[in-house]
Length: 310
Image 1: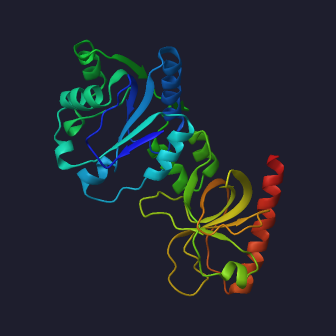
Image 2: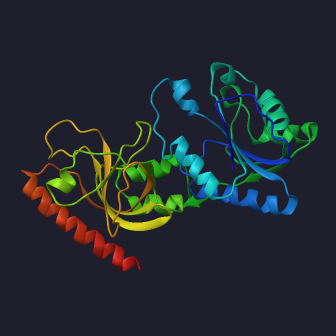
């Protein structure tokens, strides 16, 4: 996949099937749209291209931090997995916010993205104050010579599947429901870093620690059954998300995972931690010995849960 980011100066040479959006979470609604793009690609031979911004427009417009289910790196990894040819991560600036909907279509989608087919959901919006929509795209398709394909929203019990819906379930600890909406396990990507070494040196449970960026929308703090992708292989795991309240000191929010059956040094490696099931909320124990006993129970529970999945 060709990844274009940090610049407004680019041009896709090949005729393209283009979609636009945040693609936060790549949930089942997104997957429906991406699948349609794949079908058109087989029919036409055009390349597939996703247009998005390097930050959520809500961050810039509202001026307050907005969390995301998938970070920019995770979004890139996800779109690459499904075979997208181009990902354009356009700089979101004040100039961008004032671009008219028609200029957005003409300058970016047609001239730069080389869109021959535009695939969007029914609720797409673009341009100044989000005034661009499906009706506008329909109005301009003959003028600018593109085909328009509109995908209806994927629903769950009469509710549109959306990033907001997924976040709600993550906040409640309903990880299975969030995964159902996503169509795949909720995941946290990151580089394994050195922690406080309490897991291995004191508790006897060596762990892999990753520190998610502040914009990452995490589920409720607690312990989860997990699956960990390392160097092309999946391993079972048990993951704690939170601030380790039993440990003395002010710990940053971290994702700490005991990985079953791995016998190699993975410090500095990029891993993906997928959450499968919520075991219990994070809590402060009276001491490390009590914490050690509980971790042993968590490991046993997770091992049994994973065995039942096979």
